[in-house]
Image (cartoon, rainbow, N blue to C red):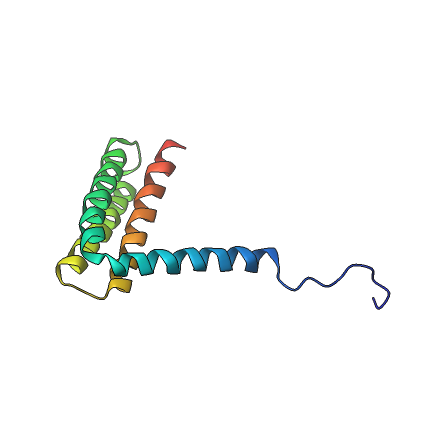
Length: 115
């Protein structure tokens, strides 16, 4: 291996993507902190609409009752948790993480129901 012509890679592709996502997360978090009052209000409306669409899609689908109700439960709990965190004036990082969790879960439920 001493005579190898390829230089060693300093950063792998996975680490590069991870750094990009963490930079994006930190920039979004800082922007959310800077204008928390306005962003929290807009986010409540957006995630409530997406959460209700996810619940509607689940209830219209042909899943078994227990699976359907469990997913509806988690969609509802995540949406309500974010709304409660905004009303309780919890730390902005915690609220932002709940917002991301709620949006990602609701969007994944919507996408998975059409597959």
